Structures are given as C-alpha cells and as structure tokens.
Image 1 (cartoon, rainbow, N blue to C red):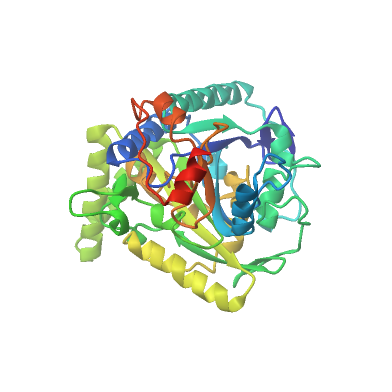
Image 2: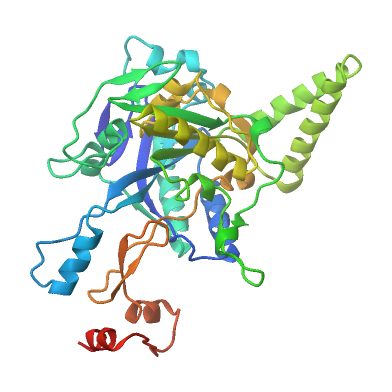
Length: 439
C-alpha cells in the first residue's frame, strides 16, 4: 500500500522493517564464532513480540567483474591486470532481513486465502498504534543485539533503496527482475502450478516444509572437507551448501514465525491426549503421542518458545537444459545437509508471492513446521563472499571460489583488528618480480 518512514505497509495492515545484513567472509571464522553468531540470533529473535515474522532472504546472483578503467592512476601493468579479469563471472551475495508484524488471523492463513487469489484488496488501517510502537522498539533492540555481537552488521534500508531511484535499482525491482542491473525492464510474470517464470527466466523450487524432510541432527557449523586436513578443520555454517558453494543463480528464503507459544503448547497438549485415547487403534498414534510429549517436555524443561519455520530455494535459468542441471544441483546441496530434497510444484506461486519483501504475512501456514528457535537458526547461512578492503593501499589477490580480483590490505587492517601485532613480510620471486615489488 505504501512505503513510509522506511517501512513497507501492506494493504492488509502488516508493517515490515527492512535491513541489509553483512556476514563474515567465507572460510574466515571457526566453530566458536559460528556458535557465537547462532547465540546472537537467538537472543535477538526472543525480543520480538508475538505474531512477528523473521524473513531472511539471501540472493546469489551471477555477475561479471567490472574493473574501473577510468582511473588515470592505473599503470600499464595494473591496467593489463584489470583487462585480464574483465567480465570474469562470479557469484555475488546480497543478504536482507525483513521483520514483519502481522496478526493472529494472518499467521494461520492457508494458501487458498492468499492475497494472490483475491480479485482486489481492501486497505486496512493499522489501528493498534501502541502495538506497532512496541514492535518498532523491539526491532531496535533486535538491531542493537546483532550489531553489538561484532560478527554481524545490520543496517536499515531507507525508503529510496526500497522503491529505487533513477540511478539505483530498488529492493522490489530487484526481486521482480532477479537482477541488480538498473537498465533491466520489468517483465511478465507467469505464476503456474508447474513453474514460475519471469520473462525468459524459468524457476524451480525446493522446500523444507515438513519435519520428515529434515536431518536427524543439526548444528551451528559443519566441517568443510575440501579445505580441511587431519590436523585442522575448515568450518562453514550448516546451511552453507545452499549458499556460495551452490554455483547457480538462486534465492534462499528462511522464515521464522513467532506465534503465541502458550497457545501452541496448549494445542499440542490436546493433541497428545487425543493420540493417547486412540493409541489402541493404531501404533502410529502411540508413536505420534511420544513425539509430541518429547516436544512438550523440551518446551517446558528449558523454557523454549514454540515457533514455526520454513526454508526454500528458488533457482532459475534461461536454458531448459541448464535448468535440469540446476535442479539436480539444488537437490544435491540439500542431500549434503542430510535433508530430503522435495521439488515443490504445488505452492511455487504462493511461496514466490510470499517472498516479496514485506509480504511475508501472505505465507501459507500449511507449508511450515513447528520447532524451536535454536534448531531453526541452524538453517541460516552465516557467510558471504570476499570483500575489498577499504584501505587505499594493498595488494590484489583472487577469490578462492571464482578467481575474481580482491583488493586486500595485509598491513594496517589486520593490525587494527588485532589479528597481527607486527608487519614482518617475506617476499619470494624471480628478479623481475622482486624489482616490480620494490617499485
């Protein structure tokens, strides 16, 4: 309906605050840091009120390296270096967080009542001004906890960045074009049961929406065998196979739905009693009762609030043959996490619709599962690609995954961060390389 005061307001009365998340770089942190990040997310989410939605959206877009040829300070060797890497493809990562305040009725909405199925929308006023004020205050606490961690940075996205300007593409245009290029026009959307298509880009959807699809155990991080040895471990987040290591255009959506925990637990208590009374007719009822009892014991013993969660991956390609390969790659990535790959063709349209920034309130409730905050957070990706140092001087290195040039300060920045305490350097190379280094 409107974008006001850096907030997205829907016609159903939902209010959404948008943030950009800056995560640690790939292969740069250990298991202790991943555990600290996981704990930070948990503390922050517990500050949100009931009927809030946490939507973390990671976009992985294939882009081409564009050097700055207009810089007159480039020497012959520097310009030749830039020419060598010009238009080299790499996978770029953009991470956003959308915090939505909705209502109890919207949280229970099924896919057949989505606004996608309505002919028109009647705007609703945000009547509970006190509740909205408390929500904005809790989001401020959320942001403070994240930024104080020292590992993640969270910046609020302003109104101009949401709707876009003449020079920069907006957050909404980026989602509807699946591109960061400012000159890409809006194209037709085909939302069907078999596929979702934006222009010539055809999308496939894989979902984690049922506990039967999940692994038996989860953790904050996992060992990356390719760069690990017998004496050292290279760690990545548990959901890293769905991140930068999945080398295709894709969007990874992570949803957490903060219901009223007391109401949810009472519903489970009633369900457990029903299962117990029907246990004589089926062994499955007895087993389900035992699982419900374990869930209730966990909630009451540790005071863990009951929430719902959902995770999905939208991947796309313009070529049908490549799309089949992309579909298999996403399934393989889910299998690496010991998840059951589920290619979803039923709710692809409604899930794409719910993934629009600020539209998480339209998420179909039947596509989520009950869990706790701590295990759900294990499915958050916690790393991004390598970034250029802000220092004006440094050396050029290459991205470990794609070979894209990275400007890196190996002198002052590590000293500032406390990584090193001296600047001893050892340079090894032929005579020509040594002379070039001295110059």
